Image 1 (tube, rainbow, N blue to C red):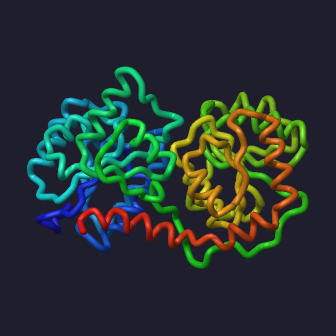
Image 2 (image 1 turned 90 degrees about the vertical axis):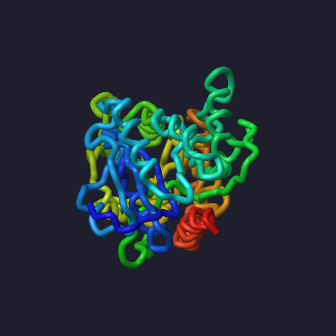
Image 3 (image 1 turned 180 degrees about the horizontal axis):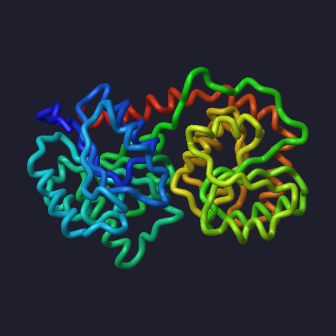
Length: 351
């Protein structure tokens, strides 16, 4: 890859190349000079096709060109330190504390050139004991903290962070093509949809138990280690589609009325943004990281108490009774403005 820039405004140290991160870096790169360092590919993430990395508005490098879990951490650390040492930059932006090479590098670069993105909420993060102490040390190696939303900002505050805090308003930018597809009639009765990995943390057992009882139509789109066991306990009103490529999700959103996400923990919930973009009100558990920014404030749906079947039943009833109100709020929501805020936050770092 050619070296287009001698000096970069922002250097991002991130995990794997997911589509929503690429979209974000691309938009930031239209305004300022950006370089992205990917650690590798993550089998549990929504990795993009390598072709998507062509003709972007940023430069990039991989520390490990393969499965991120199979990398040699010492070799990737050495490679990372060489890249940083040979790069002229104004700020390095690191994602959280789950990649040790990135943590170590924060102790080498100056604090006034370090910024930390946090996509973990206070609800899912330990702030006590040795783990909490280490997190306090790590975050205070940065002069700027970049939490995704209010739930994430709370984590920095609990860790006693004293630097500048800037909300990013998201974790990336979803795929948006053409005119926003929101003008369509509702189904009677409502058709519910789950999109995501079929894993225990998504709490699909609760969804299936609830929909087995209420007999409402539910589609589960995705794949994962829980697929076989979930199918075995589902009644005929629950349909499994298997994995659907993100580029093809528009069709399945169009066929449904409500997105439902019962996660036991979810750092943000990019699928909530996708559903709202496609015109679907949402029902999410109170452990979904974007609940304040994407649900509570714009009143685009209902939040229920984590792993509480009665609370979920009440949320479904609320959605059934007030669907038209939530639908109108979804239509009114300006997702493009939210994305402009997100890009603007990163650009403001160097202003």
